[in-house]
Length: 476
Ligand code: C5P
Ligand code: C5P
Ligand code: ZN
View 1 (cartoon, rainbow, N blue to C red):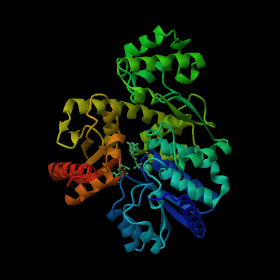
View 2 (cartoon, rainbow, N blue to C red):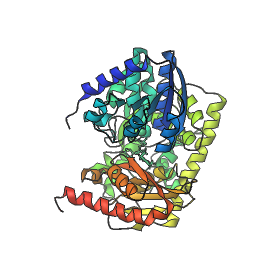
View 3 (cartoon, rainbow, N blue to C red):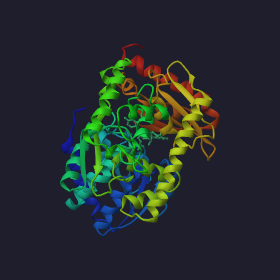
View 4 (cartoon, rainbow, N blue to C red):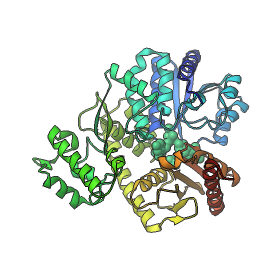
């Protein structure tokens, strides 16, 4: 489809105008970094416009929750970072709603237009919702259209995009995400530079940055604390400043250059091509108003902090941080962050212990109750990024949810997407066949299915992926 950014922006204008006519709005958002930043942008926008508002968070929007909302009064419902998969049902229920989402929509632009829906989704305009704009970004464009002064919200919009890993494909944000960057810079809230892309530039000791490196992996150093320390010492980098560990941002220009070129040399000497070394550097996004060295200064670190709140039942903490609250609340978010980090490390170990089962076109692991259903997706993505997993078929992670169902998370590589894999379509179709629901993006998707249907679901999914590959390669 032709990319129609003008159409996208004019729909944002129209939605903004309609929201202004309301006196009360209920925001419904997703429990991850992109969802929280989207929700925060919506709330701040409404607050500034003098519109009364409330917010609720959902793990996954489903028909029963829509039915409940339909019975709950006359406020305008504003769905952020979700909703595009259920817009038809919202219409049927007679809900009065706005959607600012980037997931693959069930209805076409024409259908949505014909119903007069206040529904903004990049896919309707040929804009790629997996890479070019996130839920917080789509929400930001409506916010900006409501009031130019809302351009200072561009900073948290970029945190949402980074939370959804939209900077990973090209090692920088692309598409309409760049409009947000430009706004953020002009508003004095954002700046960016090309730097080492590894996670934790602001807060981690440098050796930990290398120890936990994953994209690209550093052969012999990733996962090995002692080797990471030795590598830096051999380059003459002092690891500490007095008693304190130095972080990446504290290194001088020459020190940084020495580390980057030593990693590149190591990668090349071990036969990793230019493609790997090319991913070492990329754009990193800094929130200028946050304290240097804090968890909120770097967009990727900010996003992880938000995930640590929302995915553990504390979305309010993350939302308030997006809205500027600090103090004790920030301290409790940091506690949640250390719990989240621990859970991710343990989660990766669970996958190693349980093992990955290979089918013909997919591979999967089952974490039972050992990984929370809210973070199994993150663990699946990290596993697929590690060097111990096949890259030529998607990875699927299963976890038992507290509600007696099974949560499924699937992740693909960029190569697989280029070869025609669309996980959102495959999971949606396979889940529907076992009375479950699924969707998401081509590169990352999820589903919830009945527990007794796990094996049936996996076989159907295997067949779906086979069909996608064969359709692309011209087979039957
Ligand atoms: O629900 P939502 O859209 O916020 O989630 C997007 C998901 O897609 C995230 O879990 C993110 O990690 C994943 N993703 C990915 N690789 C990309 C883009 C997104 O794994 N290149
Ligand atoms: O939960 P997970 O991180 O694996 O989700 C990956 C993507 O799939 C997210 O964008 C999420 O919103 C979407 N998803 C969905 N329907 C589900 C589960 C996840 O659209 N039932
Ligand atoms: Zn999102």
